Amino acid sequence: MKNRIHLDVRASRGRRDPLNRRRTDIDARAEELIALGATRVRILSTEGPDHYGVVMQDPEGNEFCVN
Image 1 (cartoon, rainbow, N blue to C red):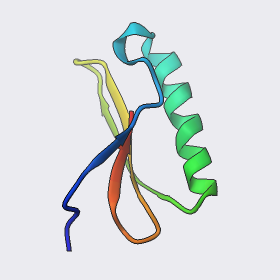
Image 2 (cartoon, rainbow, N blue to C red; image 1 turned 30 degrees about the vertical axis):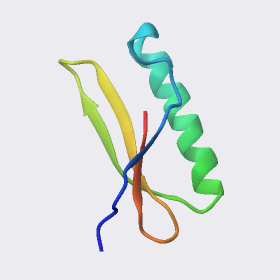
Image 3 (cartoon, helix red, strand yellow; image 1 turned 180 degrees about the vertical axis):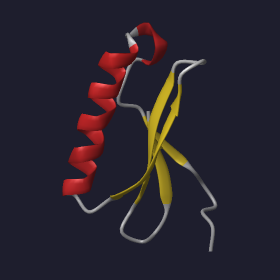
């Protein structure tokens, strides 16, 4: 069954920080969540709009994003 709600975990200050800083912050938070039982599903990265995020799954299979 699909999620009824989709959560985003804010790990960066968005475009106020340079992309390389955001990647570092987001990846660090994703690793913390993996240590707690989450799974990395895929990376969301778009060069043009300068976007980076990580789609993850909790132990019950619910997806959420870290950005």
